[in-house]
Amino acid sequence: ATVPVPVAAEPLLPVGPFSLQPSGGPLPHGWEALVFENIERRTRYSLQVVDGVVVVRAESRAAASGIQRRQSIDLGQWPLMRWRWRVETPVLGEQLSRKAGDDVAARIYVNFVFEPRKAGFWARQLHALGARRFGSAPPGSAIVYVWSNREKKGTATPSPYSSKVMVLAVRGAADRPGQWFTETRDVGADYRSFFGEAPPPIIGVAIMCDTDNTGGFAQASFGDIVFIKTTR
Image (cartoon, rainbow, N blue to C red; front, side):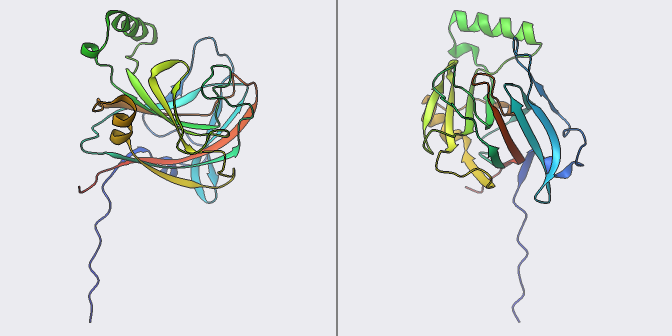
């Protein structure tokens, strides 16, 4: 008789274990609000059961805020990020290359540590000012994975707010709202492609649904976020 060989569980680093939380309860440990100066209306985030699984539901009405987890992650150990998401109501009027249209129903930030030795004098001063104002060190660079309602899947563009933030449309205009998708990205490879150098350490991950620039309405759901250790 053939004896089945047990398959070892895939090594995972949980970052957003939303499915393990009670519906209507608090966010997982370490997750906190991400708010912005001069933006009074905030997106509403809550843990709800969707299709039998607890996820983060986001609803934004002419608003902008996010939720984030500050967590150090070594891409040498955990090179891949995987998550589930779904957009129910996309943003109309989205234009990712313009501040006036920089709204999307679903985006995930991967934030990287600021490296003073690679920055100029004014960049170092602005970073220090930001650290004093917000009480913690802001990232030096970021990759933002978005579900775009307008761009073609695979389109990459600098953020209209900073050349050190690259925006990648993981889902595009051809992807219908209301469907769940599971994504896996090699974050280090993406960083090298965008910035032409090895990535610094990750300092945190954030998710956001925002409509403050276009004044519209959007809804999205975010499933678990994990980093994966490969055997390569």
